[in-house]
Amino acid sequence: MAATLGNVWFWTGLALVLIFFVATRLVERSAAGPTILNSLDRITDPLWRRLDDFIRIVVAAFFVAIFAVGGVYLTPDLKTPAEWVSWAQLIIAMLIFSRRTQPMAAAGIIGLWLLALRDYDVFHLLDYLALGVGVAAYLVLETFDRSEWRQYRFLALRWGVAIALMWSSLEKFAYPDWFYPLVEEKPFLTFGLPRDVFIPMAGVAEFTMGFGLLWTPLVRRLSAIALFIIFNAAVYPFGRIDLVGHALIMAIIVAIAADHSRGRPEGREMRQPLAAVPAGLAMAIVVIASSYWGLHIAIYGLEGRTSGPAVVATHSHSPEHPHGPATPAGIGAPPTRGGEAPPMHEAYRQVMQRMHEPMMEGMANPDPDAAFILGMMPHHQGAIDMAEIQLRHGTDPQARALAMKIIIDQRRELEEMRQWLRSKNLSQPAR
Image 1 (tube, rainbow, N blue to C red):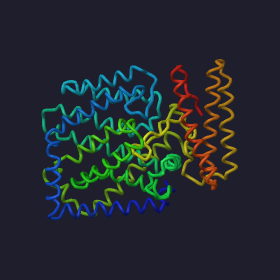
Image 2 (spheres, one colour):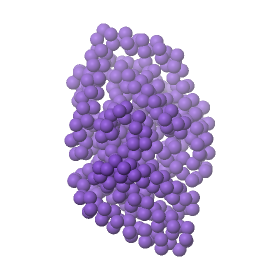
Image 3 (cartoon, rainbow, N blue to C red):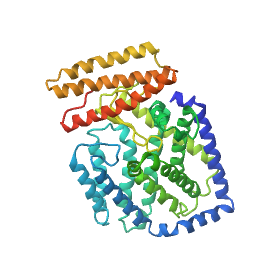
Image 4 (tube, rainbow, N blue to C red):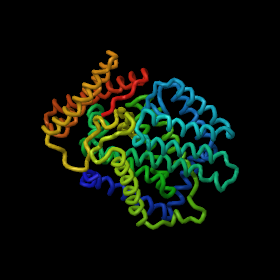
């Protein structure tokens, strides 16, 4: 957190976003505001009149696509060897087409998230929980006949996707090293900006656009349009799997852009003072960031260690890092930002110490195949840890490129090993 607050590009990004939000609010409060909103209403009116049908169809299509991908929970990021999970998601899609069975589909979505806790760490599943709860709440509220409850269905969607985006964006501030290999592999993502400028500003954009989805009508609709453009820009370079993974969020932000509602009937939302913009954004940053780092410390401790579930899914909903690799909990996690990094040689020594015992334990397994996998996993993780140390301390371009390649290759092979262990019903190695 201290590293984030000391990053000049973090504050630069916040300043630019605040200017955008304040300018949008000034326009919204002026005589031009209703005209702009009415114009957006006319453009989106065909969708607005069938918005519930649109959302239900897209949610059902998303689960059909997840079924077609196979071997995943809720998103391509979360792998599972259990074939029945894919069929369960196809059943969820079928349940969405009847209002009577929509609550069952909602329960199924929450149930799949709970099931994912067997293989993935709760901390890194929380943004999926926010999105899942938002969609599940919508499916339940949409079935109500009483308008005083049904009117909150779109609000539930907005809160779900907003929290998911704000939560996942913090990874760019907490662990920018995770994104180095990706921007080196696909340098066009940075739009020509230096890596250490682009990553924090991309995090700010993702966080603040998520915050904007909870704000006044013009702010949230423009934020939704901006997010839709960003997510669509990632479809071509990252392919159809990225489209499947982001389809649910993209559908919800389209619904937000098409939402004609003006907020509370008494109009208090539209009369918010300009000072509420920086105050609201500051409150959102404090609440989300303190929850993120507080929960991280509560689960992993100050040193970033964990005694919880064996697998972590590192990910972000942003197109800049759409499908981060899943890594064993506590293994190879970027160094904590709570203090100064140890000197280079001490860091290497610690890596070797952490690697030796798990390797020896793994190779002692009586099954020769399991011994190979369990011995190689800490070896690979040690290579990743050493490569991350090189990225923190090294300056030679060729050595840094090699370190980035090692991180990408070793993480991919680690995932293959974890999948093998799961297919054999063997436990993942603990650090």
